[in-house]
Length: 131
Image 1 (cartoon, rainbow, N blue to C red):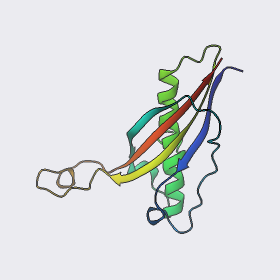
Image 2: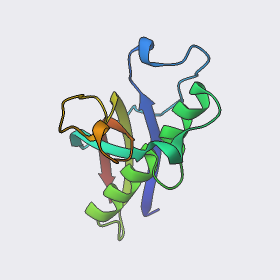
Image 3: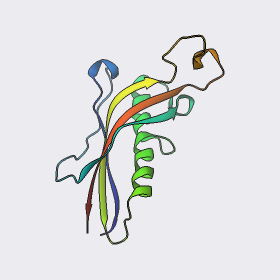
Image 4: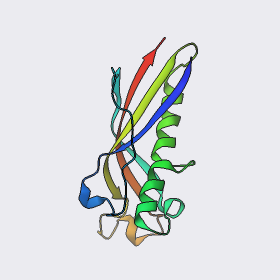
């Protein structure tokens, strides 16, 4: 069966960055992975699009938002870079870093302008390709 399968996103953030009522997703990461396809990739997610009514729901949306979530952006990258004609591509993403684009407070930094706030998520993407 040819095509792309996204096994999901592992939330590998430290516990202090996760809301107490948040539950990590279950993701299949076993098997022979071809490669670490992308390392330390920074994905930006528009905060106003992702934010939900509580922290745990927002964290889940960062992963699963169908327009700009981590899983969607990873799928778009893998789809663009791998030819799936007659092959099966399976991948998963590991989320390992989390900040915003508003971390610096110098006189020329974005927080003093009309810049839009983004979540910035650092990820690794692992890929397996089979005929």
